[in-house]
Image 1 (cartoon, rainbow, N blue to C red):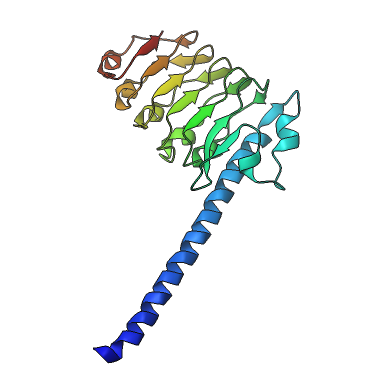
Image 2: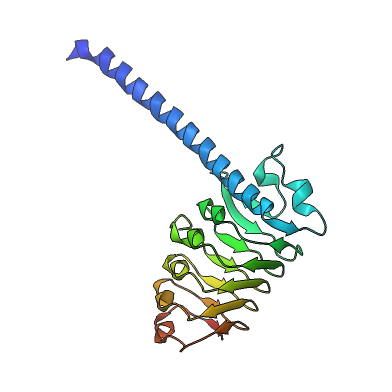
Length: 205
């Protein structure tokens, strides 16, 4: 057994080094993925009155230093995207669904239009998302039912948009504490499943 020990040590060291290189590569890929997602959003901006994103969101600087962006202390991934009150116009790209560490998505009080891409929530990558604030924009179409599949979601504010259709029956799948659907053009009944939101503290219809 003693003669095999050096071989075991070498194999173990090789496996550890391989794992380390894999982790480094994965981290680099993840950060790059976050960057691509945010640059896709920048490309979908059609009006930026103060040129905040045009001047600040640059490949030459770390995304963790970009305006409106907060990164986690340990993993250095994007955890907060808050560009509320920037006066922006444009649409939301599906690539935002690749921000897999995102906890807060806040784009309120802008002029974003169009529908919410199905891929944004359908891919299931946003499993850490707690707050979604899309209020006071010009977003339209139906609410993707997949947004309510995010079990960590606590606050959803869709106030003052042009969302239509029925409120998804999947609404009780998450642990919402605050829900605002005010000032939209929904049709149909208020789903009884709202009564299953046992953590709900604020409801605005």
